[in-house]
Length: 250
Image 1: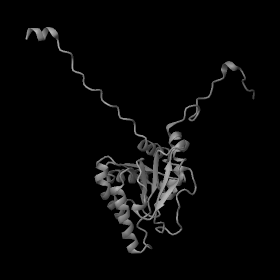
Image 2 (image 1 turned 45 degrees about the vertical axis):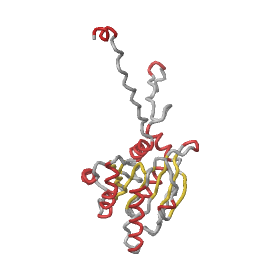
Image 3 (image 1 turned 90 degrees about the vertical axis):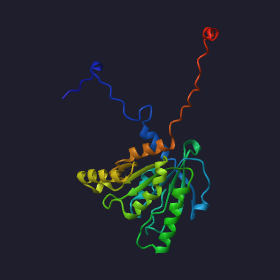
Image 4 (image 1 turned 180 degrees about the horizontal axis):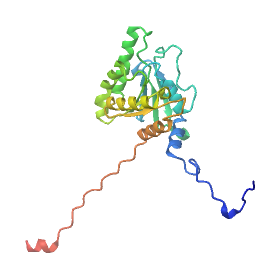
């Protein structure tokens, strides 16, 4: 078989995403990749007061929170996944921003609901997280991890009730259905519809670190949360000049 080398018959390849100008997904993922450890706090009052947009990740132990954070930031060990779920009981802050300029904060809240944790520790951490979600002034958005095979649990519903007033005031909210690769297509469609009804106005997305599903969509949403478009100031209303003739006639 011969190959046609006639230059007139050559069709240039279509430009690929990433050639030249970066896609929104590439920009968002590049931004998330800048995540670096900032500080850790065992109690709310140890957190530094900040005026940067802050996005908190929260969810039950074993819901895949650490895996999701590490996948989004393209860093294998940024978020620590304890071998004993529920034992990591600190609020961890990570700085985000290119060229050394921090423009947002990613917060990793402790997992909750693990049965092996003593009851008094559960109660204490429920109070710490509730106080954080209610009082953290610069909190811009909340990402709730949920294993779709189990759906939203009673503790997840309690969390939704806690943040509902702030969501009504404009706080951004997303439920990530992790481990979606373990669902059939019909199961995924069903749980997505059910969770959207339960989300109360928040966003819901399917996610799978294994199948690389939902990563771009989540990254772009978080980027938008932290970089809202600048509000245009309304031009002052200018009253038309008085008609001299009308003034003379009166």
